Length: 496
Image (cartoon, rainbow, N blue to C red):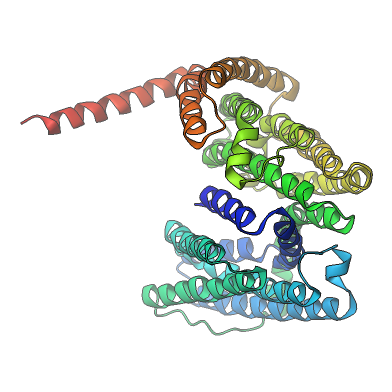
C-alpha cells in the first residue's frame, strides 16, 4: 500500500498540477512535516510499556498508560500547534520558502491545514500502539493501512476533480480525523470496551521513566524526520526551479522505495538474528548476517541497474513530464543505496537487539555531515549538489560509522563481510544489466506496454535467476519443496 500510495499520488498530482505548483506543494508539505519532530519516540515507548503490562496481566497499569499516553499526546499537540501559530505570525514562511505559484493566503491555508493533520496524526500515533500492546499488531497495521488507502483514494479523486492545493490540504485533515481517529476509536471501543480513553498527565516517576527510555528513541525519530524534510526545505529556500526540485523529489522517492524494498528483507530476518544473538549463538549470528548481507547487496545492485536502464522512460511515463530524470541526481542517490545496502542487516540487528545508541549516533553523524554538505553543495550546484550531499551523509553515517559501532558486537569482520557482499553484488549487477540491455534492444520501453513488458521480462530472466543463485542452498530447496507441494495439491484438486 505504501508503494502504491507514493507512486500513484505523486504521479497524478504532477500530471494534474504541473511541476511548478507541485514543487510549491512539496516544499510546504515538508515544512509542515517538521512538526513530526514533536513525537519524541513516544509511540514506541508506549507500545513497549503496554506489551509489558499485558504480559504481566496488569490491567490497571495498562489503563493508566492509556490515559497517560493520551494526555501526553494532547499536550504535545497543543504545544506544537502553539509553536506553529507563533512561527506563522513572526515569519513570512511562503516568502522564505520561495513559494511563487500559490498566493500567500493559499500557502498559509495549506500550512495550517496540513500542519493540523500532521499534529492530529502525531497525537493518534501513541494510541494506535494499543494494538501491539494487546498482541494484535497485525490488526493495528490493517487499521492504519485502511487510513492510508482512504487518504490515497481521496487525494487521487480530489486531484482528478480539479482540486487546488488548499482543497487537497483540507482533504488531508478530513481523512485523518475521519478515517484515522474515527476508524481507530470505533474499532478500539468495539474490541476492548473496558478501555477508557480519558487523558491524564504523567506523574513525576512516570516522566523520569519516559526520559530514561525515550532519549535515543527521540534521537532516532528526530534524525529520520529531519533527514527527510530539511533537504527539500533547503532547495525551496535557495530557491530551486520547480522542474529541478520536482525531478529531485521524484528520484529521491524512487531511491527511498528501492532502499525500503531492501530494508523490508532485512527487517524480516532482523528479529530472528536478534533472538539467535540473545541465545549466545555467535557463529550462527555471523552466518545469518553474511547470508542476508549478500542477498541484500545483490538486490540493491539489481534494482540500481534497473533504474539505470529503465529509470528515464519510467519517470516520464509516471509523471507525464519529460526531462525530470536527471542523471546528475540519480547517480549519487542510487549510489548511496548501493553502498549502504550491506549495513542494513547490522542496522536491524542493532535495533532488535536493543542497541539504540549506535543507530542514534550514526543518525546524528549522517545529519551533521549530510545536511552540512547539502547546504554547501546545493547553494552552488542546486538539486544535483543536494543529491551529492545526501549521498555523503548516508555513506558516512550508515556506511562507515554504523558498521564500526555494531560489527564488533555482532562478531563480524566487516571488511571480509564487505568482500563477500561485493562478490554477490557484482555478478548480479552484470547479469541483470546484460538481460536489461537485451530487453531494451528488443522492446522500446518508452510506451506503457513496452515498459511493462520489458520490466516483467527483466524480472523473470534477470532478477529472479540472480537471486536464486545467491540464495543459500537450503532455502532454495525449501522454496522448491513448497512450490512443488502446492503444484501437486492444485493438480489433485483439478482431477475429476
